[in-house]
Image 1 (cartoon, rainbow, N blue to C red):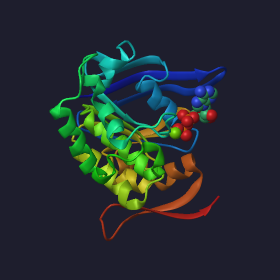
Image 2 (image 1 turned 135 degrees about the vertical axis):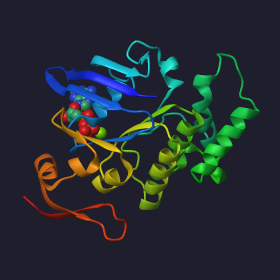
Image 3 (image 1 turned 60 degrees about the vertical axis):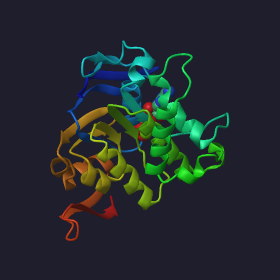
Amino acid sequence: MELNARHLSVSFSDADIVKDVSLKVKSKQFVGLIGPNGCGKSTLLKSIYKVIKPRGEVFLADTDLIKSSPKEVSKKLGVVGQFNELSFDFTVREMVMMGRTPHKGLLETDNDKDYSIVDEALHKVNLAAYASRSYNSLSGGEKQRVILARVLAQQPEFLILDEPTNHLDIKYQLQILNIVRKLNIGILAALHDLTLAAEYCDYLYMMKKGEVIASGIPEEILTKELIGRVFDVNCEIYRNPVTGGLGIAYLETY
Ligand code: ADP
Ligand code: MG
């Protein structure tokens, strides 16, 4: 299932926050969105997952996401956002069960299949023992894993992640990225750790001040020149001798 966003723009009052961005995520690709704080990554993602109405168009396969109903879209598209606070308290199991909602009719109750999907999702994120805990009592990292379990229970065909590894220990950062990669579906993820972006992404879009200024495979985008220009830091790129992956050594800031 391919995602195609064309000429997306978002403005708040007078400020242009996203400026004519076009991007594509091919079937089963893991695509990263990188760029400094405030460059418009979250706004761009929200305009794709229908929290903000942009100018331009967004298609997921043949589905016009801007024109489709939220329920229709939520059958196909899963989202892990940045902030996951709730005013009402739910148990962890109830939170994850909400992932099943898009697949159910108005008065349809939860059945054995839903329960087993929810149990499996909780196991995958190592939270089976937390099923009866109150969601609000969890740490930021545990909440993030509950939200991931909910999106797994939703069984989406495409996933949008907005800095999904914020607040997480490195073990859980890797766990979350490994779990989503194994889903083998298209993923568009804003990531702030450039080394993780290099390791997990097939393709990268680099943003600055609302615009995509470069796109390509990690080796083309994570260069000394582009990182210097966009993030305003001095770095050297090297081959990590242990992993064989791209390494970034940050030198003194400018
Ligand atoms: P990023 O995710 O790359 O850090 P954001 O998309 O969150 O960036 O924000 C981009 C810019 O848009 C920021 O300057 C932010 O203050 C501004 N912005 C975001 N949401 C709103 C809003 N609802 N109203 C006005 N400005 C906003
Ligand atoms: Mg953001």
